Image 1 (cartoon, rainbow, N blue to C red):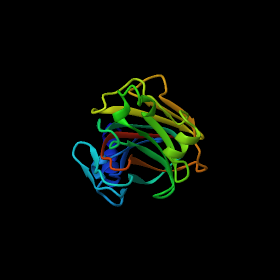
Image 2 (cartoon, helix red, strand yellow):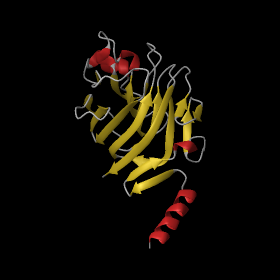
Image 3 (cartoon, rainbow, N blue to C red):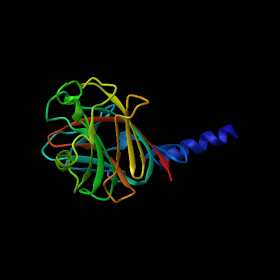
Image 4 (cartoon, rainbow, N blue to C red):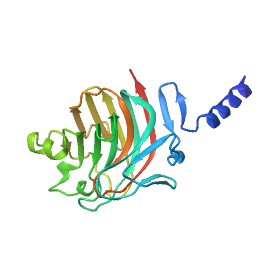
Amino acid sequence: MKTTNAIFLVIIMFVCPIMITAQQNEIIPNLKEVKNPDLWTAQNREVTYDDAVYLSGQPGSGILWLKDINFKNGVIELDIKGRDERGRSFVGLAFHGLNDSTYDVVYFRPFNFENPERKGHSVQYVSHPEFTWYKLRQEHPEKYENPVNPVPDPNDWFHVTIKVHYPAVKVFVNESDDASLEVDQLSSQKGGWVGFFVGNASEGYFNHLKISLEE
């Protein structure tokens, strides 16, 4: 029986290079396949893989979408690396994406992590296209952005856990038991794509993506 199960697993890995499913509701995409257009699609970015996924920096926002997944509720985990350069490092994760302009995002500003005057703008939720960071900051100051706790090295990798149970979104950093951000989604979509996100003029590195699906 063990031999049969091992052969079956090998067959699944070759037939389905998009992901290895540890459990029925757990998806671990094969990030080495990010250049495969049948599995991933990039918006406004060049994408490479060398031990981690890299999205190039250029004007405008960019996303690398994982195709053929409809994420509704659950937990998304990943590692992210930006840089400590003000206004040039916006890195995070888009979810409930419907197209290239309609999606929700949780993203980070590493250049604010250790800045005592700007640390309150370290992690941000937005819902494009209507609820931009500027609109939310003007109309709901300090509600949709927060400091990050614990504070990561702004030039190093940090681990992110995003828990979504529509409309509630909770964001945790580096395995902390305390959420760095808790908000209710402003969008009406309750499901959609998942993708790595970089903001205007930003590049970013991403790794170890895991998606756990719930009803």
